Length: 96
Image 1: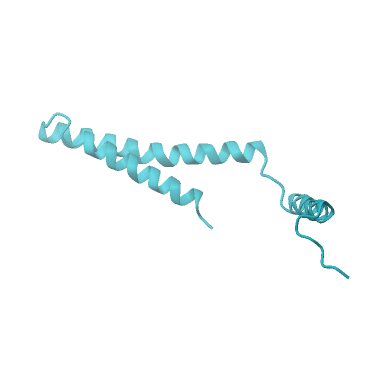
Image 2: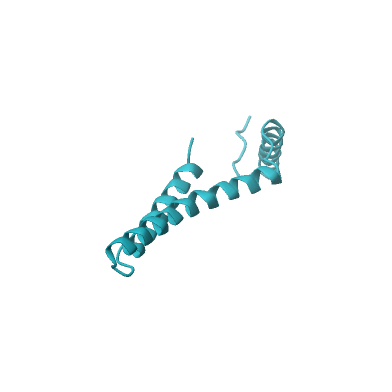
């Protein structure tokens, strides 16, 4: 008896059929989230970035008015708020 060759078309076809059946079974067991769920996730990610940025704007404007410094505090606090928001969104997307 000879061992099956790795390039045998029947073996490749059988392996492809096994992989397709496995993907189908996994798809039935764990379906994709609904469109509403995906839109909700996008909304959460948006607010996760926007809220810290707006807090940076508010605090920076308040400090600039208090010390009469133009945009000395506003500009860096906007960047810090946006960076924190993006980092937070990234952490939320990659949570286990």
